[in-house]
Amino acid sequence: MKKLLTLLVITAAFSLLPSVSQAFCTATGGVPGVFVRPGGVATNIGVRSNRPAGAFFNFTSTDSKIITTALVSASTHTTVQINGDAATCPQVNAQNFIAGGNIVSILVNPN
Image (cartoon, rainbow, N blue to C red; front, side, top):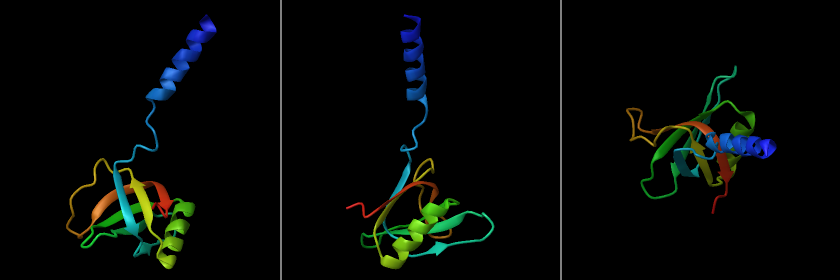
């Protein structure tokens, strides 16, 4: 009985942890540019919506796999879906883009 109770407590504790998949800012479109800076500084990855007059999103990452995926997507004109950790997808800022936060996940060819 004690083992069962312990197992239930552990299961409940893990279910209360935040999920990586619960990103709050999602953009789908092409990658028109990637601004890579050396030295482990966050790389800026832009995503422009495929819709007419679509918004321009700016995400950041230091993960080399995500950066490489973005670079390949940009060079092959492949559609991506990027999930960022911004609390919300804010309005367009003074630099004329939407800050999506740090990249949580990237999906290539989401359609």
